[in-house]
Length: 234
Ligand code: DC
Image (cartoon, rainbow, N blue to C red; front, side, top):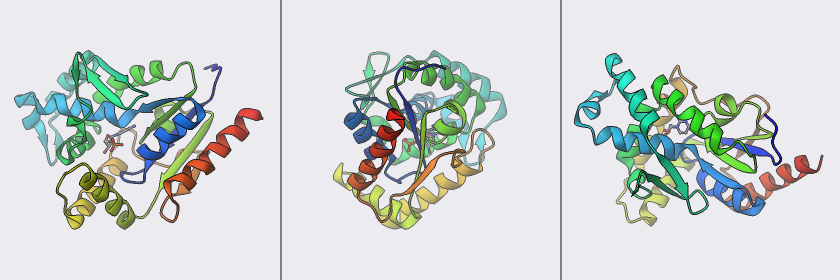
C-alpha cells in the first residue's frame, strides 16, 4: 500500500483512553480519526433491533447458523462518519449517542467475535484509510486490518484505573454507574476481546507500548505526536 501520509494505529483494551487520545492525536496532526469500535457498536445496535438476531446473542456467543445472516447484515450496512470522525450514521439515521451505552458495549464485544462480522467490516476500514493521514483506533487495527501501518501504538493501563476512567466518562454523560459493576464489565470484555479466536486483542508486533495509568491524556498525546512526527521526518 503506498500512502502519501502516515497511517497510525492505536490498539488496546477497553478504558485505556484510546478514544480521547486518538481523537486528539488526529486533530493535532491534521489527520482523519477512524473509530473502528464505532463500527462494531453500530453493527451491535442493528443486531439488537432484529428480535431474531438479538436472541442469538447469548452468553455462549452466537449460534452457528446465524453467522451468515450476521455477515450479510454487516456488509449491507451503510455506515458513515462525520464531524472529524466523531459522529456516526447508519443510512440517514444518526446513532452517535445510542451506540455508547453499556448494553451496546457488551453486545459489540459479542458480535465482534464473529468472523463474518469482522470480515464484513474489513473492506470499509481499509477504504476509509486508503489515503493515509489517518489515526485508526481499535483492537486489531495494528495486527489484522492494517499490519503495514507506519506507526503502531498499544495503549494500556491496569484494570482498576481503566474502570475508574470509564465510570467517570459515563457519569459525565449522565449515566448512573457503579464502579464495581463497571470493573466487572471491563474484565468480561477484556476476557472476550483477548480470548476470541478471530483477531484477538494483542500487542501488535513493532508497536510502541504506552501505559496510560501514570500519565495524563495530554502527556500520552504529546509522546505519540512526537513519535509520529519523528517518523514522518525520517
Ligand atoms: O473500542 P470500543 O469500546 O468502542 O469497542 C467496542 C467493542 O468492539 C470491543 O469490546 C471489541 C470490538 N472491537 C473489535 O473487536 N475490534 C476493533 N478493531 C474495535 C472494536
